[in-house]
Length: 143
Image (tube, rainbow, N blue to C red):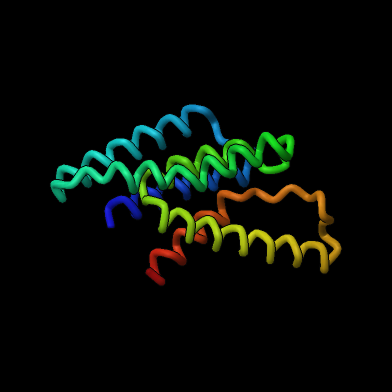
Protein backbone atom coordinates (compact mmCIF):
# COMPACT_ATOMS: atom_id res chain seq x y z
CA UNK A 1 0.00 0.00 0.00
CA UNK A 2 2.92 2.34 0.70
CA UNK A 3 4.03 2.16 -2.93
CA UNK A 4 0.56 3.15 -4.17
CA UNK A 5 0.43 6.14 -1.82
CA UNK A 6 3.90 7.33 -2.89
CA UNK A 7 2.96 6.84 -6.55
CA UNK A 8 -0.30 8.76 -6.09
CA UNK A 9 1.45 11.69 -4.38
CA UNK A 10 4.04 11.73 -7.17
CA UNK A 11 1.37 11.63 -9.89
CA UNK A 12 -0.58 14.43 -8.23
CA UNK A 13 2.56 16.58 -8.22
CA UNK A 14 3.29 15.72 -11.88
CA UNK A 15 -0.35 16.41 -12.82
CA UNK A 16 0.07 19.94 -11.54
CA UNK A 17 3.02 20.47 -13.88
CA UNK A 18 1.33 18.77 -16.81
CA UNK A 19 -1.82 20.88 -16.46
CA UNK A 20 -0.01 24.19 -15.98
CA UNK A 21 3.08 23.91 -18.18
CA UNK A 22 2.46 20.86 -20.41
CA UNK A 23 5.84 19.39 -19.49
CA UNK A 24 7.46 17.62 -16.57
CA UNK A 25 10.76 19.14 -15.32
CA UNK A 26 13.80 16.86 -15.34
CA UNK A 27 14.31 17.24 -11.59
CA UNK A 28 10.74 16.05 -10.99
CA UNK A 29 11.50 12.96 -13.06
CA UNK A 30 14.69 12.41 -11.05
CA UNK A 31 12.82 12.78 -7.75
CA UNK A 32 10.31 10.20 -9.01
CA UNK A 33 13.08 7.80 -10.02
CA UNK A 34 14.71 8.21 -6.60
CA UNK A 35 11.36 7.67 -4.86
CA UNK A 36 10.80 4.57 -6.98
CA UNK A 37 14.14 3.11 -5.94
CA UNK A 38 13.45 3.93 -2.29
CA UNK A 39 9.98 2.34 -2.47
CA UNK A 40 11.50 -0.77 -4.08
CA UNK A 41 14.18 -1.06 -1.39
CA UNK A 42 11.71 -0.31 1.42
CA UNK A 43 9.28 -2.95 0.14
CA UNK A 44 12.11 -5.48 -0.16
CA UNK A 45 13.34 -4.81 3.36
CA UNK A 46 9.80 -4.94 4.75
CA UNK A 47 8.76 -8.16 3.02
CA UNK A 48 12.18 -9.82 2.78
CA UNK A 49 11.67 -10.37 -0.98
CA UNK A 50 13.51 -8.60 -3.77
CA UNK A 51 10.96 -8.62 -6.57
CA UNK A 52 13.26 -7.72 -9.46
CA UNK A 53 11.17 -9.43 -12.11
CA UNK A 54 8.02 -7.52 -11.18
CA UNK A 55 9.86 -4.20 -11.10
CA UNK A 56 11.64 -4.77 -14.41
CA UNK A 57 8.53 -6.06 -16.18
CA UNK A 58 6.71 -3.03 -14.74
CA UNK A 59 8.88 -0.87 -16.99
CA UNK A 60 7.21 -2.28 -20.13
CA UNK A 61 4.19 0.11 -20.29
CA UNK A 62 6.48 3.13 -19.90
CA UNK A 63 8.95 1.80 -22.46
CA UNK A 64 6.09 1.33 -24.94
CA UNK A 65 4.89 4.91 -24.43
CA UNK A 66 8.47 6.23 -24.78
CA UNK A 67 8.79 4.33 -28.06
CA UNK A 68 5.45 5.73 -29.22
CA UNK A 69 6.69 9.21 -28.37
CA UNK A 70 9.56 8.80 -30.83
CA UNK A 71 7.41 7.09 -33.48
CA UNK A 72 4.68 9.75 -33.34
CA UNK A 73 7.20 12.61 -33.20
CA UNK A 74 6.10 13.73 -29.74
CA UNK A 75 2.34 13.63 -30.29
CA UNK A 76 2.54 11.43 -27.22
CA UNK A 77 4.86 13.14 -24.76
CA UNK A 78 8.15 11.58 -23.75
CA UNK A 79 7.49 12.83 -20.21
CA UNK A 80 4.38 10.66 -20.09
CA UNK A 81 6.48 7.62 -20.92
CA UNK A 82 9.14 8.53 -18.39
CA UNK A 83 6.50 8.98 -15.68
CA UNK A 84 5.11 5.57 -16.61
CA UNK A 85 8.58 4.06 -16.25
CA UNK A 86 8.73 5.40 -12.69
CA UNK A 87 5.20 4.24 -11.89
CA UNK A 88 5.84 0.81 -13.42
CA UNK A 89 8.97 0.40 -11.29
CA UNK A 90 7.07 1.39 -8.14
CA UNK A 91 3.91 -0.62 -8.74
CA UNK A 92 4.78 -3.52 -11.03
CA UNK A 93 3.36 -4.41 -14.40
CA UNK A 94 -0.19 -5.31 -13.38
CA UNK A 95 -1.02 -2.12 -11.46
CA UNK A 96 0.84 0.10 -13.95
CA UNK A 97 -0.97 -1.47 -16.91
CA UNK A 98 -4.40 -1.17 -15.28
CA UNK A 99 -3.73 2.48 -14.37
CA UNK A 100 -2.50 3.17 -17.92
CA UNK A 101 -5.50 1.55 -19.59
CA UNK A 102 -7.96 3.40 -17.33
CA UNK A 103 -6.04 6.63 -17.94
CA UNK A 104 -6.05 6.14 -21.72
CA UNK A 105 -9.76 5.31 -21.70
CA UNK A 106 -10.54 8.40 -19.58
CA UNK A 107 -8.42 10.68 -21.79
CA UNK A 108 -10.13 9.28 -24.89
CA UNK A 109 -13.58 9.94 -23.43
CA UNK A 110 -12.51 13.46 -22.48
CA UNK A 111 -11.19 14.07 -25.99
CA UNK A 112 -14.42 12.80 -27.51
CA UNK A 113 -16.43 15.14 -25.30
CA UNK A 114 -14.23 18.06 -26.42
CA UNK A 115 -14.84 17.18 -30.07
CA UNK A 116 -18.60 16.76 -29.61
CA UNK A 117 -18.83 20.09 -27.77
CA UNK A 118 -16.66 21.68 -30.50
CA UNK A 119 -14.09 22.75 -27.89
CA UNK A 120 -11.33 20.80 -29.62
CA UNK A 121 -10.46 18.63 -32.59
CA UNK A 122 -8.43 15.51 -33.26
CA UNK A 123 -5.20 17.50 -32.87
CA UNK A 124 -6.03 19.13 -29.52
CA UNK A 125 -3.30 18.40 -26.98
CA UNK A 126 -4.59 16.84 -23.77
CA UNK A 127 -2.32 16.45 -20.72
CA UNK A 128 -2.15 12.73 -19.93
CA UNK A 129 -0.72 12.63 -16.40
CA UNK A 130 -3.98 13.78 -14.72
CA UNK A 131 -5.75 10.89 -16.44
CA UNK A 132 -3.01 8.49 -15.36
CA UNK A 133 -3.53 9.76 -11.82
CA UNK A 134 -7.24 9.04 -12.17
CA UNK A 135 -6.40 5.58 -13.52
CA UNK A 136 -4.19 4.82 -10.52
CA UNK A 137 -6.87 6.07 -8.12
CA UNK A 138 -9.51 3.87 -9.72
CA UNK A 139 -7.16 0.86 -9.83
CA UNK A 140 -6.44 1.30 -6.11
CA UNK A 141 -10.14 0.88 -5.38
CA UNK A 142 -10.94 -1.97 -7.77
CA UNK A 143 -7.93 -4.19 -7.11
